[in-house]
Image (cartoon, rainbow, N blue to C red):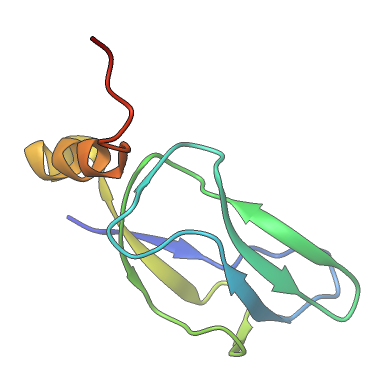
Length: 101
């Protein structure tokens, strides 16, 4: 079952944030605490880390979108839920030219 990543409350008075830049692509395997998205508020610009490991299934908002705090911005599959599909994607990300003899 997909897990939602919601825009966290970055400061007490912050009510929204602008998605500046996604740092991972849909289908990427993401590690726990890996930088995921850059968000700008009226107080700060930060890179938000992934709160869990898994596969980024879908970005629910686009770069340039302004979203309220606690809105879902991405969907993840757990690495265990993704099973072989996640390990296949990880293997494809390895440069095939870098082989050892």
